Length: 304
Image (cartoon, rainbow, N blue to C red; front, side, top):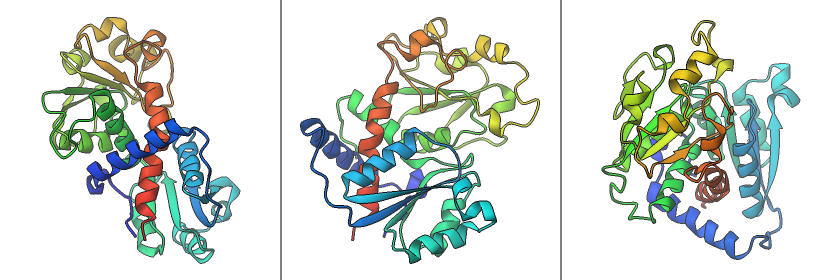
């Protein structure tokens, strides 16, 4: 019963191959026969989600599971029930896995301590989002021709992640997986949106020109205003001027660089329309790949 709590614990090569098998299967049979719903998977989401929740719902169905989607406002959480008691309740009702998104850092680890079923971290506060990091890595793996995932296949590639680094769980999971694959990772944000402490295996800067210089991969991040204290971002116009990923700013990157975004996108803020929808964009590929990767991760977690 493997939990999926952090990016560092993922069996990356195995999961990339599993995701590729799901991609090939669904390309060959876009509407495959689905096994009867003999098992239940709980999707316990204490925060809003579109891409992650929908991908896990599809993944559960593809694996012959019935997805039980539970939001905090429509559950006993609204009545004061603790996370541990919610997990115990779901275990007692026979769920085979729990996909958890929670605003508190460490919530998946807390849930795992009392759960008989595997816990899959779908994002905990500003800490981690392992399956998003994995699908971003898978997207790049496909883009670069599926090199041997047991090697440092991104060696010599520079990745610039630009945006609200302080509050980004995506940046933290991506830093782990991209560094493991050999990439040179740069994290760029205004000084108030950089983390207070250095992050291992990453260059931190508030200079977008420095971050994007000769970058092979540029990832824009959403400004998470819902997590920001007042004053962390003085002006959206100043952010657009200094950090928006647009045609002018991308001139510093390599001519064949690709652009990514984990979503949701705030168009005209962190990224311009012509870049989000342009030929260098892998954003929709990331969305498509989310289903394959979540199916792979759920399949792995449900191994007997």
